[in-house]
Length: 156
Picture 1 (spheres, rainbow, N blue to C red):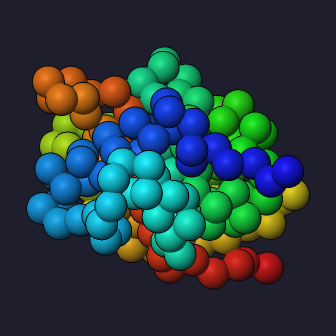
Picture 2 (cartoon, rainbow, N blue to C red; picture 1 turned 180 degrees about the horizontal axis):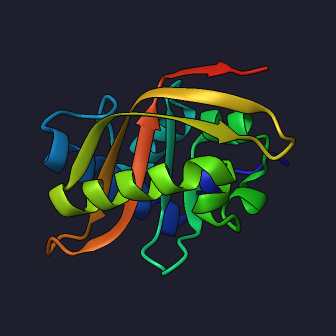
C-alpha cells in the first residue's frame, strides 16, 4: 500500500498552517484552496512545486515535504521527516542558508533565494527563486519555516 502522509490528521493541520502562513506573509495563495482541509492537504502534497518545512528546534528537523520534494531529494516520507534541515545543503552553502533563514525569521519571509542543494544520493541541484516564510500558529507564534520553489536545475 502506498504511503499517504498527507492524510494523517497532524499533516492535514500542518498543511493548513503552511497555506495560511504563506497567505499571511505573501498575500496570495500558494495553491488553489478549493475544498476542505484534507483536500487542500492532498493538493499541496501533489503540487508540481516543491514545498518543504522544518520545525523550530535548535537544529531543525524537516517535518514536511510534498511529493515533488521527496522525489527531488530522493527520500521516502519516513526518511525525509528524520532529516536535519541543514543537511539538504552542502557544507559550503550552509552559512548562506543560515543567513537567509535568519532574514526570513526576522521579517516573516524571504523572496528570491538561490542556492545549491544535494539529494540523498549526492545529486547536486541549483534552486532558484525560492520563497521562504515563517509558519505561524493562529496566535501568530512562529512554529516553523517553510520554502517553496519551482525552478531547479541539476549540476554536474
